Length: 96
Image (cartoon, rainbow, N blue to C red; front, top):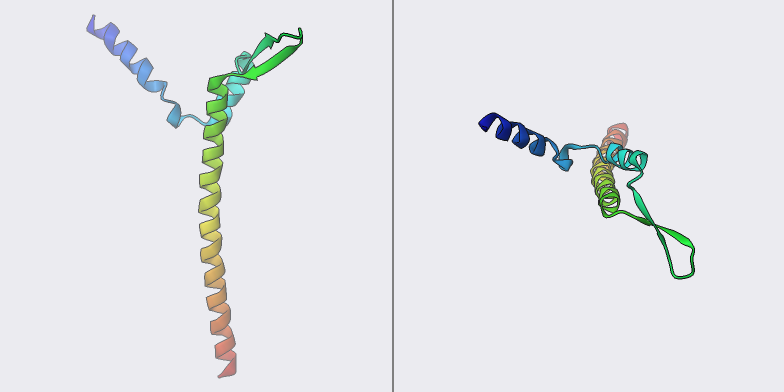
């Protein structure tokens, strides 16, 4: 019985979505057809509503890109500061 319990524990721990690439998760949801629900509204027309898991995945994707953008902006500011410092040093050395 303990081997069966350990097998199930392994599968639930591997389903952690924080280690998964959000692009692949979204693609998998679209491929399975579970990225939206189709409902018929009162007028008889069909509407597609995104599923909660798909929306959460898109939010995670946005968070990932925002973090990446903030890191790149910090690096760009550091490089700009370094460039300005070097430019000032070069212009000072030309004056001497």
